[in-house]
Amino acid sequence: MQYVRGNKGDFDLWEKMGATGWSYKDILPYFKKSENNRNEKYRKSGYHGTDGPWIISDTAYTPLAAVVLDAVKELGYRVGDINGEEQLSFHVGQANIKNGERWSVTDAFLRPAMSRPNLHVLVNAHTTKVTFKGKRATGVEFIHGARKKRVRAAREVILSAGSIQSPQLLMLSGVGPKEHLQQLNVSLVADLPVGKHLQDHQGIITYPEYWIEKPYSLTSDGINGWKSNLKYKLFKQGQIASSLLDVVGIIKTKAADPKLDLPDIEILVAPFGLGFGDEQSVYDFVGFDRKFIKDYKYSEFLNRHILSFVPFLLHPKSVGEIRLQTTDPFDYPLIDPNYYDDERDVISMVEGIKACAQLAETKALKAIGAKLRKQTVPGCEKHTHMSDEYLECVARTMTTTIYHPTGTCKMGASNDPTAVTDPQLRVRGLQGLRVVDASVMPETVSANTQASTVMIAEKAADMIKAAKL
Image (cartoon, rainbow, N blue to C red; front, side, top):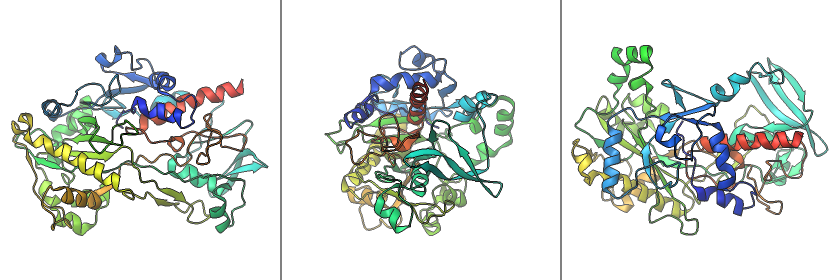
């Protein structure tokens, strides 16, 4: 839900990599087109849209937002709009929220168009393949109501199944690495590096954690209490209306790649601890081993006031891959994220954790009685607490996905052997088929991927309309 666009350099890099027409100056109008930002200061900055259908609003609920912003200023970080002139900043989180509820792209774009005669939405349908006549996409096959059905395309097939299922669907349809498809006896339509170049933002959910003396954070009793429920039902306000993130920051540590000149860490500030519900909620949320959950004593978090951080890696050097497990479209694909295959990723993550821990020495956090939790992460006992070796162990033990997969149908120039799509998002070597989702990103962005994915869709819409004309 967090609305973070990325760094200007991200998109200029896309263009340098062969994605012509995707520089920052080219895509900024598409960010603004969809956006209706409710922050009055941001609306006047020239960087934000004010009349788009997608409502973006400030999300901070607890007093911890102001405390953390004071703390980062003490450490010399800039406080300001991370989607504006300078991205290396901290600001009160913004998200697609309207009246205390998520304002999804379905709410903003799809529902208002449901009455159009040229739109038909079919639910509970599972697409199984794209059909071809030679090198031209002719439609899709899908299962609906236990029956196989087919839809023919008059002009184009637009594939928007996301960075996991778009490559899966292409490979099931014969578009992918030749050797891999031959192993599964899939008839080849086009030999392309589909599923390669998987990039994902990996991070550590709520570490480090601070015990705080002031009753400023969200707690299980506070969220589930009758007062919170009544306040939400009557006014769509209160703890239940929180996005669970008060502040977002983008930093460039000493481990950042000097060749990219981009930030390497994003920090999400959470006014709660991961175990503020119970041990089962920890398991459901991140899937940690149950013994790890017990040994780390997440039970201590229950109804305690906690401030915690989510540092995550913005530009991983480690690259993964999506492959087919079988030719059954109902079987999950094989997902190999390949986290920390490159040692530089671990070094950046260690620096990100250290940046969060530095806040313990600020006057702002000391004023609320904030103290770093000293519990040793299970499996890391042999290392000195908070040493680089210890933090590397923490990273390798507690890292999980931030659910930002990109790049598996990467766009690029016609002479780029690693590209699946061209700058018009057309699948290379084929006709009548485009991919429009986060999988086309040539390089992942310095941000949560939601905003950039919507921007890609806005720009694609203009491309599709122009082709029709």
